[in-house]
Each structure stands twice: as structure tokens, then as C-alpha cells.
Length: 217
Ligand SMILES: [Zn+2]
Image (cartoon, rainbow, N blue to C red; front, side):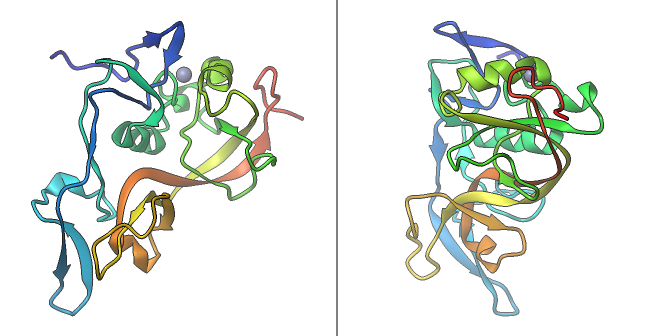
């Protein structure tokens, strides 16, 4: 199969399928779990058949997920763990996969769900990658999670804070909750999480106009 560029564009039912959206054959898999006890006595979660690619640069375990972008149906609103992580780290537009830093070196635009009814806050934790300005209207209308209400802001700093994922009970190796938990890299529970999203902390927030997505004020 030819390698797809991040910027390869896909559509489904007339809607752009965002770069970070998961596709039908990109199944997420949690392998058999185990515990490793370090010589000093500290214990942490492992995959029984763990390989070097199962952990990120912080040593955090990530769920495995196939790569088959563009094949089968797009699974709105599911997000692909690795593409989300890459977009958060490289500041790629969550819609088109382009480098937002080439558009504006000083700040990135974020368009998010406003379920909390609040604008984007200073120090806000988010699993949403940035968007380029050209894709912002599309992000606001085409992502089902954003369709009803959205907020938009520019952030000057985008700090890698932690992950969102499934917390595992160290005694039973069963999930502690069905819901995803956000865990910082400095939290001791990070040793017992299976990540499937990066979480970034945004600062240097300046609000964006919700019609034009230009910097407000
Ligand atoms: Zn874009």
C-alpha cells in the first residue's frame, strides 16, 4: 500500500473526514496485561508481549491501533490514537493534517466543544489538536461533537501535560472505570494507565472571533 501523506483528503457523505478520525479497519486492541516489579520494588503495568513501540517518549503504555486510513467507513466521532498524538505533538491541523505552525509560528487556533458552557481558559487541558484557519469553519460544522456549540481561541503555548486513557487496577488488572481518565506525566497513576490520547495544556490564550476565526480584540 502506498504511504498516505498527512494531507491526503478524504470525504464521506459530503463531509471532510478529519485527519484524526478513526476508520473502520483501524481496530483498537489492548493486549494481555501483566505487572513488572523493578529491582527497587516499584511496580508498573506491562503488555505481556510488549515491544519498544508500545511506549511513548515518557515511558507511558499506549493502546495498539491498526493503521488503515481511508479504508472502509470513517467512524465519526472516534479518534485514532496515533494520529491524535502526532497532531498534538507536531501541531498538525486536526482536519487537514497540515502544519499549523507554517501558518502562524506564534500561536495556534483551537476550536472546541463548549459543553461546559465556558470559553477556552488559561491553562485549559485538552485532547483537541489545533486547526488551521482555513479548516476552522469545517471543524466547527463537520465534527459531530462540535456541531451544536463551539468555542475558539488562539494559544501561544502548547505544553505536553499527560495522557487520557484507561486506568487499570494494580491488583486485579481490570479497568477501574469505563470512562477515560486524564493523568499527568507526574501522577503516580501514570504507571497504571493505557493511553489512547495525548493531553496538552494551553496557555497564552487569546479569544478568536466565532464567525471569522480571526484573533479577537
Ligand atoms: Zn487544516
